[in-house]
Image (cartoon, rainbow, N blue to C red):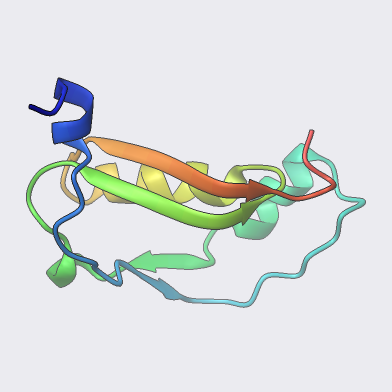
Amino acid sequence: MPTTFEAAIRVTEFYAAFARVKPLVVDFRANGSQQARNIDGSLAVNVGTLPAGPVLLVDDMVDSRWTLTVAAWLLTANGGRLVYPLALALTANAE
């Protein structure tokens, strides 16, 4: 029998929930506020594709974690879902 946490994040379907609105300029020398400004406005939610219920948000690699932060905020702002962020790897520049 799965635990409550395992049951809450069981992946049943994949949704392409985001569209890139503007390209990101990756600058590993940027500080946290510059990185946050860079990601701001770069993603949009495909509202019609979002499931009801909790969401497992997966990012392949993270550095500043701002992409996960903004993506989670966008998901909750467009439906109030519970978001579980998961990063598969940290880059060498991650703090």
